[in-house]
Length: 290
Ligand code: FAD
Image (cartoon, rainbow, N blue to C red):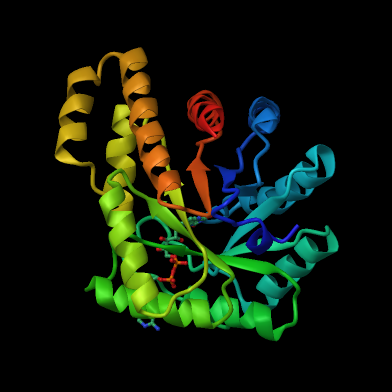
């Protein structure tokens, strides 16, 4: 199933993102998580692409296994980091041979310890170049890309970022998935600006339920998402009470999702961090209301 055909405001698609575990035990746990989430009938799941090493192969293996063993549509993320065109072509071939129909085409972050993204010789500098390459090579994927309601961390201005996104979409994207955000106002404003700029593909909001205080501080620092002041104060109050923190995180994400759905989003992508309970609670609540 091509994801572009599944994104529809009148029947929104819930999707779940996982990362490739480093160990076999982690992989077994991931399949347990998938089993827990399968009854929620995800439109698709996706598996991220690591910065290097063995987890990169695991992405291709996992999406292949997930699709074959569970029947759930699985999308691989792919980045330009450390790859030549030939290597990317080979990876795309493996995905196509495994009958996978969707790919999330990304530039990737600079490797740890490196401030700036440096393209691999014979590789790509921007995700838009990878998107164009996939189209030119005649692969038959539905292609997704990343976008940033609060602006990408490296960008000098949100207008520049939007212009670059428009070029990326024009290179051949079918849909985009947003970076996580905790304040829907950023998303609605972004969608409005994107539509005005002529970006007409489905824009899928990415939601991360907060379940761990330190983790969310780290993620927001890395990706530039802001936590609204009121939520930050509430989190501060319960940061040493794990159950209360999860309850707050789930409640906040549920309210966010309800508003997003009421405003006609085509789907919601959940950053699960390979854990099922928070996402299960939120999606169960959302399904109960429709
Ligand atoms: P690009 O679209 O290339 O943009 C990168 C920067 O370059 C932006 O600041 C943009 O404004 C600028 N830019 C683009 N084109 C031009 C141009 N022509 N001239 C000048 N500047 C330009 N990372 C991983 O490593 N693995 C993953 O699996 C992964 N999954 C992700 C999933 C989602 C939904 C999201 C939102 C992000 C994900 N990331 C992942 C993070 C992502 O790789 C980083 O945010 C990365 O820094 C940018 O990737 P991009 O594809 O958005 O890059």
